[in-house]
Length: 464
Ligand SMILES: Cc1cc2nc3c(=O)[nH]c(=O)nc-3n(C[C@H](O)[C@H](O)[C@H](O)COP(=O)(O)OP(=O)(O)OC[C@H]3O[C@@H](n4cnc5c(N)ncnc54)[C@H](O)[C@@H]3O)c2cc1C
Image (tube, protein in one colour):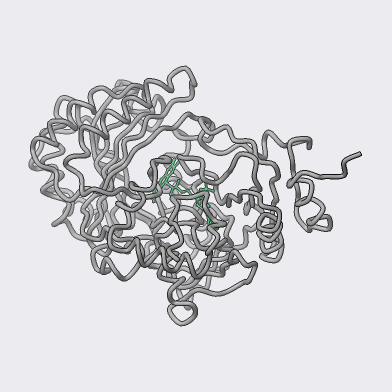
């Protein structure tokens, strides 16, 4: 009788006294454990290892490496392309790693690798402090940070990585190291934009800023006015004070409060604002844009805690919707591109589908392209074309709208895209997104992960 065992069984044996939870296809709870945010992703890992300590992360890394199992790292599970999980491999689930320590005097926060941004925003917000994150509270700190981190505070405080002071990393070898300006500076450079290519980050330390309450909310105009609104926005945002962030959006007014009933489910264009300061300052900062445009359908800015703004979209975008998105960095939006935006914005296939142009300037431009792995410091926007709907029957419609819109606008882009908003689009696309930084990343990859154990990501191939 054969005594051969599968690689999954061998990994399980190796982890027999594992201090976390191990879940395989035969275990109760497997289906909920393997589910990620994007319902279009339906992967079946061989083993999910929920890790509550850096030691258990190191053991799970060793079990994958020594048994030849493909390895995925799952932070918040939000990745559009489903890069937090893998078919037939081992998933390191970081969700039990949830500790957060705010040091209000030092203005820093230490965040464990499995936290989501809402938890961090609430903890820092108690002290009137914040660090830049994204726009949805359920997104993982791990994936968002390692890819860059664009959000409501980008213009004032930079990207998430611009505020990352140090990280504790479990390497492919199982060794645990600290990456900072003083320790493993090459690794510290690479993880600021290079994604999960270099190891599992079990804890991050971020710089905090005085943010307190913000003045935030949307201004919406009729869709027919989108070409005018986008042109005025394009010329306005780069010269607005850094305290003001505003991303342009095509969207549909959600069918509930606080939006007026007569606007429910109306497709619109607009800007979602976040001003760090008081109401008068916000009014003054936004006035040049409002003065140059017709009366909006809704100007809904109000004072709120930063953490409340960060969770304002959570109700519209719960886990379990179908997501297909494409992205590009953008330096300029010529009038021909404005006209194409107006055309595709008017063809949104479902009410949750959207297009955002996130500004990349202000503090994000204070950092040189070679200072971190995130190369596109000369871009002025990150564009994302997102098809979203709860109904799987609408996947063909959301997918083709996103692809067609992206392909129409790509000739006007800067070439690459923000890796956190890409699907699985191949090696050339990853290279284009790191540009001149790619070769340096590939050399650092060869130092820290020569066998490319960490390959379930926007992958950087080790350059030997
Ligand atoms: C609704 C929604 C809104 C979003 N909004 C924004 C936004 O405003 N700004 C923005 O910048 N991005 C945004 N994103 C994109 C987001 O940054 C990426 O999807 C990111 O990958 C999510 O991180 P995660 O930890 O939740 O993902 P996961 O799916 O868990 O992981 C994604 C990738 O990151 C790696 N990874 C995660 N954690 C770790 C870790 N601790 N150590 C090493 N590798 C790790 C994984 O290996 C994987 O390759 C949004 C995504 C969604 C779905």
